[in-house]
Image 1 (cartoon, rainbow, N blue to C red):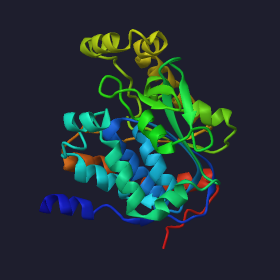
Image 2 (cartoon, one colour; image 1 turned 180 degrees about the vertical axis):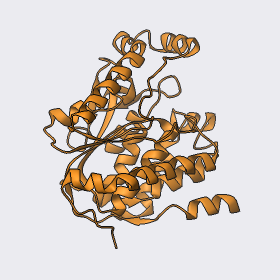
Image 3 (cartoon, helix red, strand yellow; image 1 turned 135 degrees about the horizontal axis):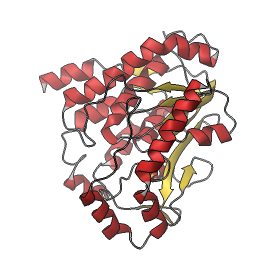
Image 4 (tube, rainbow, N blue to C red; image 1 turned 90 degrees about the horizontal axis):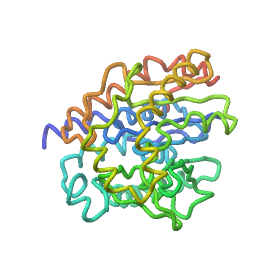
Length: 308
């Protein structure tokens, strides 16, 4: 416990400023690799970089919600503290939450920890978009406060991993993890007309998906054979992801977007239970962002002065 307390004490606690910067922050998912994203968004907030829109997939949606709330450090501390809790991660969580991660525990604490979390997240001047996969069509749905009845349920839908989670019904439609149909929604940001786009990846540059194991493919076939459009997308997920990464590389070369990605492969399992590994992923996000902070500020056309 003392070792865990030491880790937690290294993660900042506080709030970002309230000044908004035009642009869109795009957050990839990756389950507990999202601790890398936590380090990135905390560093942005500490430099008072609060982009007006954030679009997140899976874990990226959870961190995106906390970014909109201006809550520095909170989700990373929560995940590190609870990563070994069977009520939060694992079969017990599945029984209570219909998924292997207990999002009800996250949201309950988020809502009660500080009322300002909700006030800021619901600010009409701030767009928070959670990407979920419509299980009927296999297509991505971009859920936000203005087009769904429950943004927290939308985040849960976005992060409900196939096979390991039940479908989440929101406004009568079944959803699963947004990564099944749109892993990194950079094209959504471009089509929305954003001139300044920062993409946060949770895989290192050059990574390409080798494809799913035969065991995973059999499980998906058994579970989703009655959802042919969804199943078809799952069968081509690795090809789609790899093409998207090539596309992002080109957009970055062209100067159209700015990308923040791990400087080395994150040593974090999907459902990582080692707090030290999670903290190392978090620190890599902090260090990678600090190293690029001047470039980020030039790209956005702001000063990026640290919050006092």
